[in-house]
Image (cartoon, rainbow over all chains, first blue to last red; front, side, top):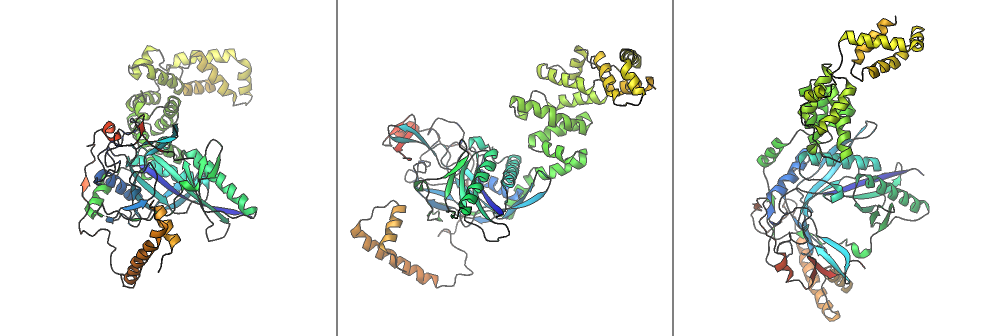
Length: 476
Length: 95
């Protein structure tokens, strides 16, 4: 039987605020255990929550960026369950009146096709602490530094049909969140986390099958693997005559499998009710308009602009807008070098390669965009060849002197003096009588070999276009 | 709508309350009375009425995003029955 997969994602992102959602404790990552857990975070009696204005602003910013409905009145609720890393015995969340309502985002697949994925809602809630299951004489250790960190939970419609679409959606979400600078969104550090609801149904069926929820997926790669694994498991169960049980499963990346969570870890009856310690949050049109006015240019519009303004391919533009920092870097290089296409190649290949090799952020890169622009300008005005430019690029990592000084100091200036090139060309023709003969007999490709010989003789400094033209002329 | 003893036991478990066999009868009667009141309220037409999130007609004030709390771990951990390496110790969560 042919099956269709139905996936919905629940993505939690930690909003990057200095203090917690309802208390003035720091949210800094990596502090000593419980040094950022105040009396409120520990749920000592008499403490009351006060909402962080920045968290609200960041949640609204996300909603506005994906064109979602923004609730002018939203309400916090208590989601009740008992777990030691949740001292209050309830998580403050938003059930019926989330701050961000329906919206959508468009994902582009590898083949260029586009799909619009619905976002059901995005609500604010507080994060829990961490349980350390290392053995403390038969006890568990609890660190409440993370308890109360603001989260935005972004819930998608069950619109995704393949694991690849789920990854594309998640990456798009990540890109938008990073552009908005509302979260670090680092999956490995847990500031972006993903749960997947997965079900299958016979192709053509309109009713949904029973779904399972996969938790604990902490990288883009695992999203695809975990979903594919779960789909295969569900197919096997059904094809063997079994039924899917609605349950929560954990993805185990080491074994590449999902397994059911113990019933103790699951509590389905959360008995939500409005949080009496918090009043409704009310915002007006001006508030929303002010946030809208502050939105940066978003990746989709930036990409379209890059294609039009700089005549880039869809692929190049996509690579260059993948982060806001890279797009900004590129624009400086493109404008100052005067060659947008060459700038695109250098930034998306040489620079990106360098960053990946050294595991650098673009902000850490020792080569500033203004310097790279000068290098490209020197290729453009024929001072150096593209090949020599790679050597200069390497040298720029070590040297703090200017690009022109590096070129001069290393004697890399391109030979454009036609007298000198003529000498080299004559030498190449003398040295390679066989190839010259072949060329004259019509084997045009040989020209590449001969140009290569000339470049070698000139130690890469001859202008290849000039060499090429002169060789053709001399061999006529 | 009446609530039987097994439902009372389930709700009590979710709220981590201990209700003895002898108390269960009374608790179930009292919750049943509350549900009867709710049934009566359900018969009202509330179509055009916005659900009430809070009895006070005021809205939430917001706090500036600033760190105002200091580390009081050592003091706070004296309140806890057990702690080690800065962690609060609790009965093992996973068996």
